[in-house]
Amino acid sequence: MNETAQKTRPHEEKALLDYAKRLDKFRAGRRAIHVHFSRLRPYNRRRHHLRIAASAFEPLIAGQDGALFRIHNDDMILLCKDVSVAELDECVLRLRYLFSEDPLLTGHEQEGEEFCTWYKIETDYRAFLSLAEQLVESRAQADAERAVEQRAAEADASEAPSLPLDPPHLATIIRAIAQADLSSVVRRQPVCAVSNDADPKTVFHEFYISIEDLRQKLLPSHDILANRWLFQDLTRYLDNRMIAMLARNDDKSIDQAFSINLNIDTLLSPEFIEFDKVLNGTSRRTIVVELQLVDVFADIGSFLFARDFLHGRGYKLCLDGTTHLSLPFLDRKQLGFDLIKLQWSSDLADQTTGARGAALRAAIALQSSDRIILCRSDSETAVEVGRSLGITMFQGHYIDHLLLVTTDPQEMIRALGEAKSRHRAATRRASDQRRTAARD
Image (cartoon, rainbow, N blue to C red; front, side, top):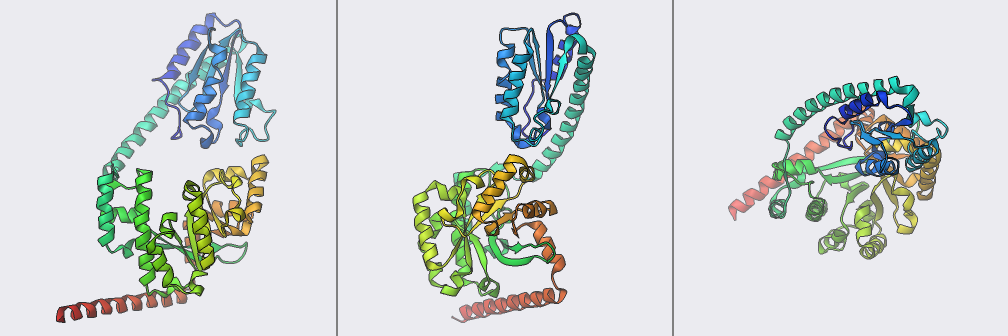
């Protein structure tokens, strides 16, 4: 059962079986419809979807000798008496329209058996009784599997942070951030252009702070992502530490193109102005500033002001946090972004055919496919789907793996040697500073 599955009443399948057995002597005029919601994609059978779907059956059972059973796997079974086929058809058509964008129904308008199974109890009683018995067995197996999963989850929970971040702890972690050396939790990940036959080519690197490593370092007992708005506040302090580290970093790798994800408030802060002052015009033109979609539309006036300031200074802008659902509602050029990051998810693979696929391709064409980065690309499937949509830039663990296996070993040795040299130089400078301070 998927994680968003509807919680059923205890053993509703047993209630269905008991109901079916009692129908043996009262078959006349009765029909049943088994609606296979379990065959829909998980994103189309969340709790609110199923609640609305169930309400569609209410006119058929209200005040009549009927019942609705909600099965553990999200399926529903409607039983009713003396209801015309036309009324039942109308109800099913409403449901099919409600979920018409699901791949189960796309292109199968005439194949009703894909979505639901009909039973005329008078003639199909044995088949319906067999279904009820199978559902009882299926529920027992699902309960057993869920018990095993729950024990495993409890074991994992004993090791994972269980306390949500609250305002007092936010203040604690902010004070710690101000004093801690965060260089050990800064990561960088490449954004690469991927063509059919050639090896991936790095376009730029994204510098970011690993939130999980930060939690382990500063507040291991708490889940700092639990409260979205407190975490958003925390990112402002992380922004300032990141730009401060970049401003004083002598690692030549940041002289190459890179991106940083910042809040709009940060871009308008004195700290960012100071960061901007240490850069020359050439450096600014190699920096991509990533902004979150939710941050942009939270205060569109501040965004427009920050956008014009950044463009005037030579920075490039990337809109982060978009999905295949939000992309068709955006206009990259009108918003003033140079790039858009589209998040990969398994749902995206279902959006490449039919009317929804055409709409998605039109949205990508509007943004310009060579300006879209498919991020979170953690599998070969993600790259294949992205390329089928015309996307050529990717970011994710799968891309990291491709780069690793295609990197020249001699180049890797050279890069490692340079990194060691920088580390030794930094160690010597720190030692000299300590000796100077001791003499003073």
